[in-house]
Image (cartoon, rainbow, N blue to C red; front, side, top):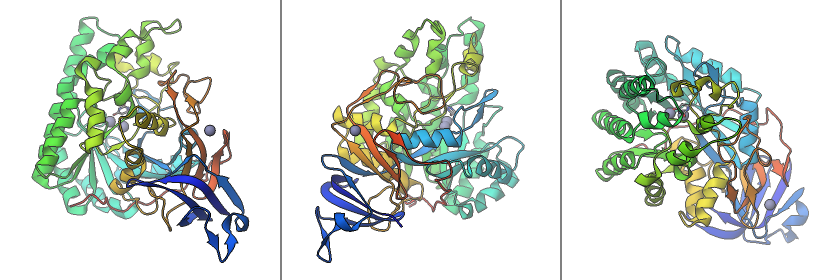
Length: 478
Ligand code: DUC
Ligand code: ZN
Ligand code: ZN
Ligand code: ZN
């Protein structure tokens, strides 16, 4: 078993930061020690196999991205990152655990959908991974399967109020699933957009010849998100089920969550880097020689980018500070422009929805520290610690403490990261949604269960290093 000492860094947790050395024994953190500690009178640095000098750097728990879609079938194609390429890109960016979504499609058994996801991921991943279960067909058999899900290490499931004909659940189905969740302790994750109403707007816009990517965001108006968020909150309230709303982008949806939390309801919200940094206007204005007006397809995702004139971004940063929003995941769902996004030329509704960000979440949120939006400790909390607590990984993941998995990132605040396809780009995409973003920090070294998988701009891991992690119930159950 390799022993490693990470020496001289500032260990950052959700609750504070201090100069400390971290001793790793095999796959596990053995001790967090005062700097320069000795063991039985011997300088620790001389008795370990490997020393990582973290002087002047932050030592943080590896990121947990609780919302990814590797290989997701969507819009007649599939998300372009495999578990192999997507988890490798995650590791490059300091994320050491993903929770991906196993999919039950309409007419399929949950057990079969889940088995298919295990097959896709097994032996492929660079880092540890877990699954949530998308329930695309709420029926009696699905409700029975839901009751057994936690025993499989899958303590959360997701419903869609959007996408009629694909993944959609109506209110009756949501109510029944939430009743099971209230009973079993499963966390209900909700894609909260009013799909049937959106689909009417989509058809009306297309009939008016409004087919450019920008109209995707027009059809998916904030009212569609606010209404669905409110409805989900009310159904959760009625059933007593805890609720986690994914990819919150509209400030009005934030207000719904905040009001419910103020009233004592057990509801949570996640946002994503794209909603903190990118706007509908930038999407509208995007043009390139290669893609012309269709350039905006690069940022077609659901929920959509919001108008900067409505100040959603400010409200989201503020909600991250006040804990009205608890964490940041990516909703990583990458598609190439060529042959994938391109399917929607002339009809925005046929553009596969999604943005690839799994590689950049830690950096983009660190920039939020540099820019004064959040504290250093809050950065760790919203990218690692809360995701671990929310989804039953805490103790093993999301914290640097004795007994935890040695998933550790050495982050250099004096470093720099230029994001772009010619530079830092390991996702399997032919463009970057983050082209030109400059980060005042750098992921230097990444340990995944004690193995150094990224160091000094080199990838040292292998497909299959990562294992499936069975998750416990959320720590946020009442
Ligand atoms: N939103 C996306 O952008 N992509 C996949 C599914 C979703 O809800
Ligand atoms: Zn979604
Ligand atoms: Zn998603
Ligand atoms: Zn560096």
